[in-house]
Each structure stands twice: as structure tokens, then as C-alpha cells.
Amino acid sequence: MRLLRAFNVAFAVVVLIGACAIGWYWYAVHIDRSHPAQSTQVIVPRGSTFTAIADQLAQQGVVGNAFAFRLLARLAHADVAVHAGGYQFAPHETSAEVLHALLTGGAQVATWVTIPEGFTAAQIADRLQNEGVGQAPALLSSFMSTTLVVDGTRTKSLEGFLFPSTYLVPLGATPGQIIKQLTGQFFKELPADAAARAKALHVTVPQAVTVASLVEREAKIDADRPMIAAVIYNRLRLNMPLQVDATIEYALPHHKAELSYADLKIDSPYNTYLHSGLPPTPIANPGKPSLEAALHPAKTDALYYVYCGNGHHVFAKTLAQHQANVARCLH
Image 1 (spheres, rainbow, N blue to C red):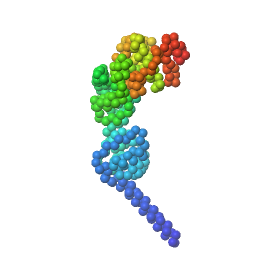
Image 2 (cartoon, helix red, strand yellow):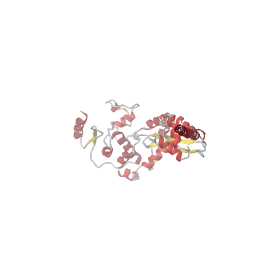
Image 3 (cartoon, one colour):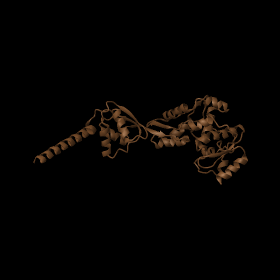
Image 4 (tube, helix red, strand yellow):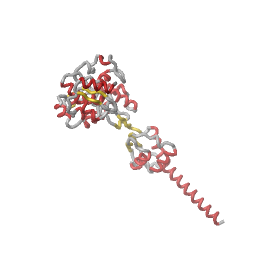
């Protein structure tokens, strides 16, 4: 009898504790409206785990208890459905309302957008639209009709000056606001010695950016970038056609994996097989390594290069050497 009484007492204690826990959890996630105390913006970094997101929300006062918030999400099978981005939370929301806003996008005010190195302005416009920021035609129109003054020279468009990076872009951003973000980053990333180096290479800074765009589209590894830049400058100095396939690809209405002989004859100022000198504008938006290579080319007399597999190009000073390299690498 005494043992049974002890068991009943223990059972009653367990039930009481369980009831208290359930009551605490229910209050914490469905009733408590003390958080956030005021409208609060939270930026969730890319790659954040839900545990990290819950901790961040608790630290910034959006939810009162990170453990209760994690438990709520787990019970709702929603702890893998929250995306990185910028969120704005109204004051005095329950944790359940905060989670709902995260899941439905109701609280989202900005999204992370990654612009890869070598994207064209058209590809950037498409990427932004796919991420829910603006309409590609309007964005591309703005990109191609807006100009910048770079070291005293006005560009023909923004092609080449929309810096590849990861941006937190407001969902309602105008083309002008997006341009300010991307070109602002370009000026931050442009090497400090750009003007002096461009002058030493007998080009303007925008022309050096054009060289960087060619390097970006041609090189596959960083080690080759200064060498490819050097070949371009060497050919410019000798008034040799650059014969860069990527410039023709830029002139074509659609991307092609391989160019035909007919493509090499396309009537375009971007056809560097038919026209000497640089193309009229950059053909892509180069990243920092390509900008550095264009401003600090290798010291070499090479005039030719060909891709030889595994990310590497091989370089030659004479046509005979180049033809031997082509035979070795492409056949």
C-alpha cells in the first residue's frame, strides 16, 4: 500500500510537471506578445541553420525563448523551410506569428542574390527577376542605358561595371537602387592603383575593364588570368586581331557551346576576328581576380593561347608553336 501511494505521488508530480511544461510552451509560443518590443529588422545570413536563426531572433528580441521557438518549428516540420534574407517584424507578435511570417514571406523585405563572376548584364537581370526582384526587361533596359564616369571616361553602358558578388537586395528595389548597389561595389573593389596601371598600359580604366571581361570569359583558373591579359595587350600593341571567341559569343543572340566558321564571320563590332582592337564595351562583368590580371598582366611575349584541359591554357610566342599546341591539346 505504501509503495502504491508513493507511485501515485510520483505519477502526480510527473503529470503536474508535464502540465506545467505544456502550459509554459503554449504561453511562450501562442500567447506571449511581449516580443518584439518595437518594429525590428533582422538580417539572416546565408547558410544559417534554423538553430542559429532561432538564437538570432532571441538575441534581437523578436522571440522570447529560442528553445520554445525551435520546438514550435520542429513540431510543425518547418525547421528546414526558413530562408536567409532580410525580415521586418511588427511589434508584439507571438512566436507562432513570427514563424508564420518567416515561412510565408510575409515578413521578408529583402533577399540575398548572388551574381556570379562573368555574368552579362542580361544574365544579371534574369537572375534578379528569378529571385523576385524586379522585371528582367526593365532592369536590362536600365543597365544598358545608364552610364558611369570612371576615372574621367564615360562608359557606354553598365556592362562590365555591375560587380559580381552576393547582395541583400530589397524586394521592392527600383532599377536605380539596384544599380547603385552593384556599381557602388564595383568602385569599392576596383584596385586603388587602377588609374596609374591603366595609364602605364596605354589604356583607359574602362578599357582595362573590357580586358578584364575578356579574361573573365576566357580563363578557367586564376593562374592563367595574368597570362591571358598579357596576350591581349601584346596583340593590341602589334595591332593584331584579338581573335577571342567569347566576344563573338557576346554578339550572338543566343549562347552556343561551340562556334561555327560562319559565326567567325558575323558582322559585328564585337567580332575580334574581323576587327582589330578591343570590342566597344566589356562583354561580361569581371570579378576581382580578372580586374587584377587586366591591370597587372604577366611579363611575357606570348601572342597565342589554347585551352588544353583540366582548366589550363598553354601559351606560345609564335604561330608555329601555337599550331603545335593546338594539335596536341585539341586532337
